[in-house]
Image 1 (cartoon, one colour):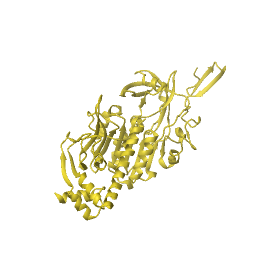
Image 2: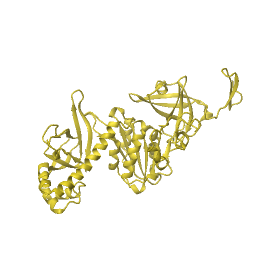
Image 3: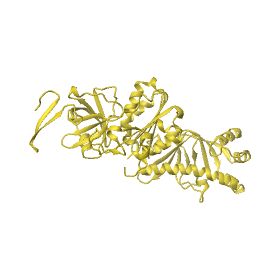
Length: 297
Length: 151
C-alpha cells in the first residue's frame, strides 16, 4: 500500500502491525533494472544498472559502493566500477564467490535488483590535483579504483604524471583487458601490468605487483598514491610506496570489511573506532595504519 | 668497450662504491652480451658460469612443467641482476632464462669473480652482502606470489 509518494506503509503479518518506511530511507532499496551484463573473467561479471525510480537518483563518486540486493537471496556491498560522470547508469563488477554474488552474477538483462546507496567516502580527487598520481590495483581491486582512472582521463589537465600498476594471478584473471590496452595507448599515462605466473603466450611482466612500483616514473615529493586490493596486497604495496619516497600522508587505501547496513548502525564493519561503511571504505593510510598491525581485527 | 663496461659496473648498485682498483679487476671479468628476442640465456641444469647485469630489455625466468610447458615465474628488467647460481656450489642454473625482448647485458664471469673474492675476502664479504640483499628482495616477492595476494 502506498500513502503519499515518500512513504511506504504495509501490514507486517508476522508482528501483526503496521510498518511505515520513508522512501528516502537509506535502508529501503530502490528498484533498478539490469540494462546489460558483460563477462570480465571466468568468475567475474560487470552489470550496468538503470534506475527505475527517478526520485532515487543520487550522485555517486569514485570510491563509493552500493548495497545490491538480489531478491530472495540477500544483500552485499559492491563498489561502483563505472564512469561516475555518467550518472544515468551505475556499473558494478562482481566476483561470483558466494550465494548472493552468485545470484547477482546470474541476473539477466531486464531483471530487477534492489540498490541502496551510494555509501561511503570517495577517493580524494580534489586533493590529487596538481600532483603525480600512482594507482595500485590488485585482482578485483581494479574495479573500485577504475572510476578514478575515468575521472583522471576526463580531467587530465588537473593531474601531473599518472601511473597505474595492476597485478593479477594470471593473464586470464585480469579485469578489463581491452580497457587496459586502451589506457596503455595514452602517451601521458604509464600503465604496467603483472601476473603471478604465465604461459609463453603472455608477453607481459611476471611477478608480484609491488615489483612494479620502483619502475614507475613519479616525483615522490609531489605524489599521491591510491591503493585498492586485498588487505595483504595493500600492506605490501604501501610499504613499497613508502620505501620509494612517497609520504604516508599522501597514500589512500580502500578497505574491505563485512558491511551490512551501509550507514554505520549494524557494527559489522567496525574497525577500531571507525566503521568502514561510513568512515570508509576510502581512508587516508595514516588513519588506518595502526589497524594493519592488529591481528583478528 | 672497456670504458663502457667500466661505466656500467661503477654505476650499477651491486658494484657502486667499490674501490677503483677492485672495479678495474672486475672489468677483466666482464663483457657485453646482447640477446635477441626469444633467445635462451641459460637453461635449468646447465653450468652457471656467468651472471648478467641487464642494461635494457626484459628477461623471463621460467620453469618447464610436464603438463603445462614453460611457466614464467618472474620478469627482470634494466637494472636487475640475472643469476646467482654462480655463487653457490654445484654452480648450475635452477631455472630457464629467456629474453622476452632484445636484451642488452653486461655478462660477468662467475669463476673470475669468485677468484677475485678468494684473493680479497673483504671484497667477497661486500659482494656477498649486496647479493644477499638482491636475494632477500626476490625471496620476499616470491613469498608474496605464494600467498596469492590478489585473493
